[in-house]
Length: 143
Image (cartoon, rainbow, N blue to C red; front, side):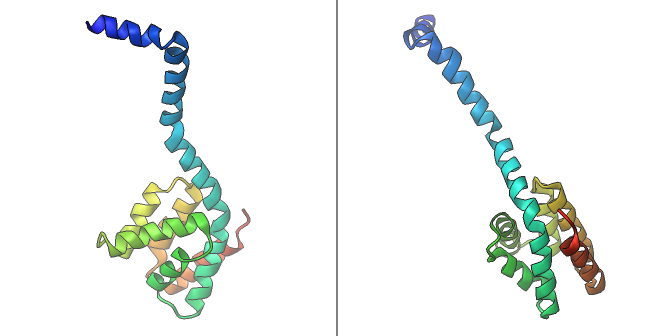
């Protein structure tokens, strides 16, 4: 019975369906996560300079790091605000600390430059003088 069902499925629906649609569907579904990561990387990297500028301006205004992250999560930056929303979700809902949340987000982001920024932010966030130098470097860095 099983070979009859397989024969009907393969040849009853047509070999075109089996040899064209099924492999095409597999390739699309297999590569979809990579495509999303690539598109997120393309959107994140141009926004990095603006993130550093906003962070530096808010730091000059006397805001704390968590307040600045909330401001960045609610900003007009599309891809970066999603990343900072993820960090805030880890802090608020998963009860992770700020430094742990930055590390988790850095490990999961597809952009190498944004990952480097988050790692360096994690290292310097406790020292305001080093943090200011880091943000100035990223704010003035050419893309």
